[in-house]
Image 1 (cartoon, one colour):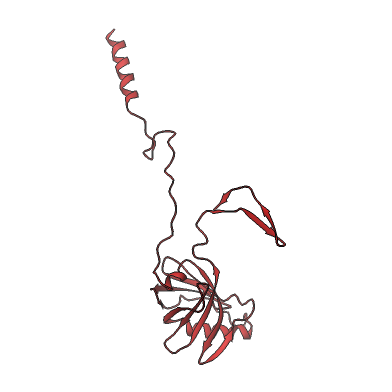
Image 2 (image 1 turned 60 degrees about the vertical axis):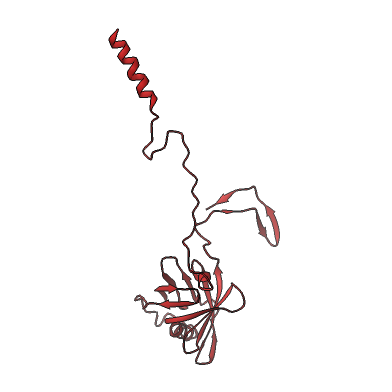
Length: 194
């Protein structure tokens, strides 16, 4: 009789405390819904740069303006980790950055493979101008709106940028409500993709 009573008490005691999973949740309990939010960048115009990718449109060096060659792929992206990656038009680059509301300070470029002989002459000329401007401390200004930015050095040379990828395009969930093919919209069933 004592053995039966002891077994009943142990059974009741073991059922009294809820069982926990390895992450501290009860079995069947849903994980809390956490939303991802990008790190905060600086305010002002400098804040527009961080988390976005920009195409180089033209450069002005010594009063002479040079338009980026077509398909030169001259671009720069500013990451939340304080780096800028991109392409001068032929070779790629990676730089450390410090961005405030109206200034961009660039660290020394990391070594990159040479592209001599693999880049068209017109692209090399643009590349050299881009390298000349994209160094040291630059002033950041809006040209017209939040889609066009100018970077200007103390000598008055500047680099004109146009938005390629909006701020924090990747890393967020999006909802697709329609597709457009040949200017004809096609509604889709509600859904999201990452």
